[in-house]
Length: 174
Image 1 (cartoon, rainbow, N blue to C red):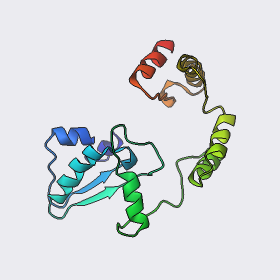
Image 2: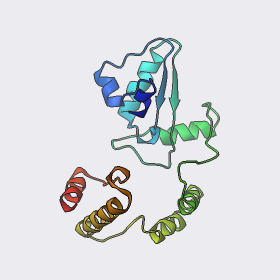
Image 3: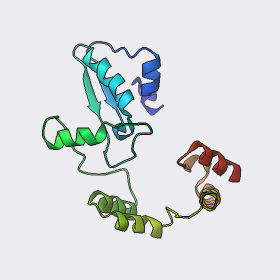
């Protein structure tokens, strides 16, 4: 939606595929969050770019971020090719997304392989919760979402869950 507002066409890979997967000559295709791109969808994009004269493909993302929802995944392979200098790449050196100092520290620890330290920082802030039972986690998450809505307003709160059924259960609790 934000890209459309500034006049840049943007679609999901699924929509691109349904619409025929055709590009104009000289197109630049940018795949954001490429770590979430399953192999089948990556193949659709790569084939379209390869078939289009003068086109370019820019893959944006982090192989350590969210993994694809279906089989495969291009990001780990791409990271290896970049490290081997077989693929031209630019690297993000300054993160401006995480504004909170604790969140920055947690991300830095995670990127340096200190997963437990990162998790502890996030846990100490109350950003993540761990439960043995899904039902308990969902009930606690619903309370946290409602508390955040009271504090920040509904337009500034998002809740994410792993499965569709977890989302439905969370919605029911809220």
